[in-house]
Length: 340
Image 1: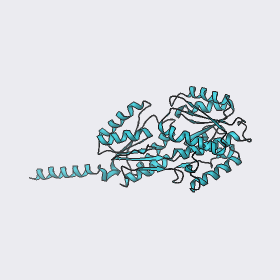
Image 2: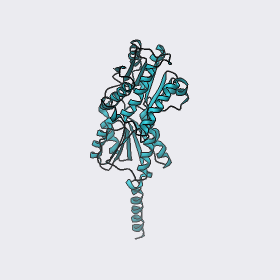
Image 3: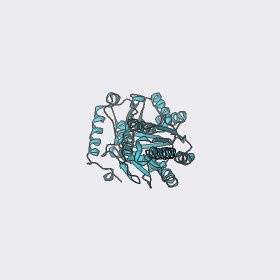
Image 4: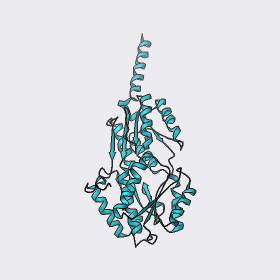
């Protein structure tokens, strides 16, 4: 009888311990970070991983980071495998393409919860999605690019009024938000400015990016916005060779090449990741919801306090950027009023 009692007691203890790993006991669960690509040279993914770990470590939650590589066709299967393991209370990922994939995975594994940062807005049961306003972000860097190409104070600026853009690959968010936002920003300053776009075809070929950038610079472009992952370094190399300028996207890149990388339009993905994971830990995350974050909410920004920005950007340009940024933060300037 005594042995039977001990056996039943052991079962109860085991069940209670297991229940601490369910949704009500998030703090004891592991979190998986799925990177649809690689961490190194990918600012948004680095920020995601960093932000997740900040909140997870405070709660003593283990974090496992999985790099999915550049083969987009394999991401769905890799995410399915992670979900099938049943080891993670939350799987965090980032990329507009991952919203649809996460929804599919949640349908197959309804007990698994997902957080998609920088998503597409598509949600379903078990999926929380955050969408940044990249149109606003691109507008800010386009506005700055126009001021650079018009400048008489920057030695690398010429009088041809040409700006460039090099992107790794085309994708819906690029075509719908970033390219139009960049162009609206430029033409708000001067409708006569011309934009040249080159597509690299991947996110890692720095030598090809250098060649594309050199061709643009030699054709009269004096400033290029580069969104090409690890290949961005090739654009920097070309700008140094030609005495011209580069603009950065998503993270602050001015420290990579002071005086060459003049400015950045950023998203605060590290903060968004940390705050969202903290909400999940506390049981406050609303699954099936999508939230859009922009300048007014404080997640899209144009940093101007860094020593490299202050040193290399003329005060006249900095003052104009400060004015337009403040108007957007206060809600007095909306892109809807500038369309067309």
